[in-house]
Amino acid sequence: MQTYDRPFIEKWLKEGNRTCPQTQQVLSQTVLTPNLLVRDMISQWCKNQGIELPDSFRDAQEEGITQSDREYFESLLEGILSGSVSEQTKAAKQLRQLTKRMPSFRALFGESLDAIPQLLVPLTPGQASLHPDLQEDVITTVLNLSIHDSNKKLVAETPEVIPLLMESLTSGTIETRSNAAAALFTLSALDSNKALIGKSGALKPLINLLDEGHPLAMKDVASAIFNLCIMHENKARAVNDGAVKVILKKIKNHILVDELLAILAMLSSHQKAVDEMGDLGAVQCLLSIIRESSCGRNKENCVAILYSICINDRTKCKEIRAEESAHGTISQLAKNGTSRAKRKANGILERLKKTAANTHTA
Image (cartoon, rainbow, N blue to C red):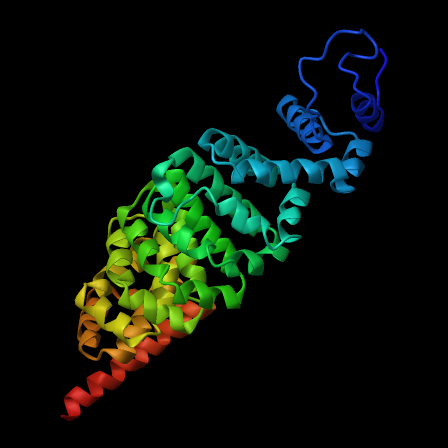
């Protein structure tokens, strides 16, 4: 079987030939499939068949993209800029697939300041979910781009991106909303992006989506909130936006307990958060988890939160003391917990002794 390389085929077509040089059959179309797509198709087929890729093929993949691949990328952006929704959807879907599977294709977006704004053109602010499939493909492409470390700053600082991700947390398919949260999580790996995302007001829609409790979105949302709250200013924003009430409600319902306890432990350094936890019955909930959970990390987070409550809200010491008399929960943890859990548990016990001594003295 005779095969031809790409330069030969391009030259053949440029000379005006519209037939196969081997069979002389008339070609039904003359658009060349990019090498990148062919490699991707082969890679996917091998994966589906359980076949290991040849080393030579892997080497070719690692060489990066060709000039024809760049031209195809530009043609997809032109499709995005076209006035036709069907053309935009087709191009967006292709970009989504390519940026998912090809790291080199993600890098292409970082080579031009115009590429990311062009990608977002089909989504009108305030009406992003008008065409849900198109919105999903564009938002998922933004997520894929954000995975590439060199793109994180550029993506977040493109003025249209964060407002569009925030809007997509509240509208569109659940996959769109989940992927918008995942994109914010990925972008928030950079401290400068944490500040930018926090200032933009993204925590409120994230907390609202967490409150909705859709299983597909919960982990991505919790991860985004956790990452953002590493920055002190964002802790205050999260607390003011109602994070404590929503998180405690989920924990009490045994939903995503590990991840949400980690966020609550982080927020417990904020006085308003501690006050809310006390008012919302957090003490009994946390003591119950320490007694019943087999997870050392969860016990550790619970006792860290209780320590903050004990230090900042003296009225709750009485509640913890009553629990200690009945079950010895904190004493048990002081003996058998992780090193951090033991330290916090002993801190609580010392605090209980002090408050008891002060009460007797008074």
